[in-house]
Amino acid sequence: ALFSASVSTNDANSSTTSSCGPVTGSLSSLTSMWPLSWKNVKIIELTAIPVAARAISGEMFAPLVMGSVGSSAGGQLAVLLGLTNRDDETSKVIAVVGFNPMLDLTDMAHRETMITRFLGGSCTSKMDLCRTASPVSHASSNAAPMLILHGTGDETVPYRQAELMVRRLKDAAATVELFTAPDAGHTFWSTPRWYYSSEQAMAQFLARFLKP
Image (cartoon, rainbow, N blue to C red):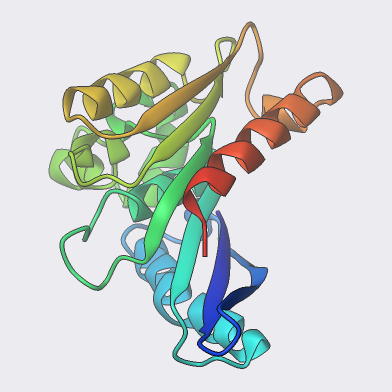
């Protein structure tokens, strides 16, 4: 997962706005078992990135705008940041971009070994935990604006997961957009054919919401 934060400062005398960023941090979901991976990513969101951004700007109490970007298992964490704790001060992410993100762990039977390692057991034996770790279970009207980019030929994380996520967010009246790459596989965005268009879609989406 990749996080980008900017600090906005307003000069009362000149009425100008300055910003620093992006400041980035990264963490892969599957480097540790759930929920440790989630705890780690919340530490990055709430402390490491804000402190770094404000330190660079020299404005330790300035307003902060933060977006999260992730791919695959990292996408699971990036998307969850835009879905959970939206009613309190423990959520700082205001825009999310997920590249072929893992959105529904109950729909990953073809990757059972990976999911079992991640959860400490199969989804069948740990269904409540499996659903808690699945972003589709947290779709609501409070979700941060979200862009999901997914290839229809993805054999690692099925494209139908993106369709389900988009449908649930739209049903909840949340802001969500879907970038579909026909016949493209997992991590399609890193290939020459899709790199530029994927990057442009992400940049344009984040520019709309991550305004100082």
